Image 1 (cartoon, helix red, strand yellow):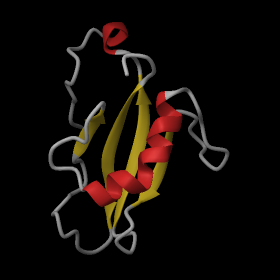
Image 2: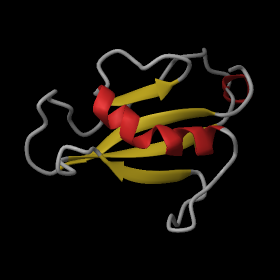
Image 3: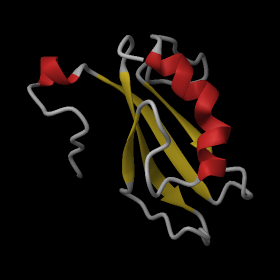
Image 4: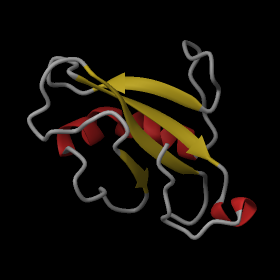
Length: 101
């Protein structure tokens, strides 16, 4: 799994209630395992998009070729943005590090 881009999943909207209490700004780097604390149902819903972004794909409906938004399957209460990231070596950051903000 070393090949491909890293992808960041970030909560960008919570419409009502999230049973796992995800909140705007929560973020995870998606790698070889499901990150701790990320709702497995949301991950399963956007896993195909993660795979596409990781391998250089994009979505015709997204204005940003590096990102796309997907709602969780629980009535779309939580909206996640998936964003392709530059390789950590190119950014000078430690692998796994995520900046908030």
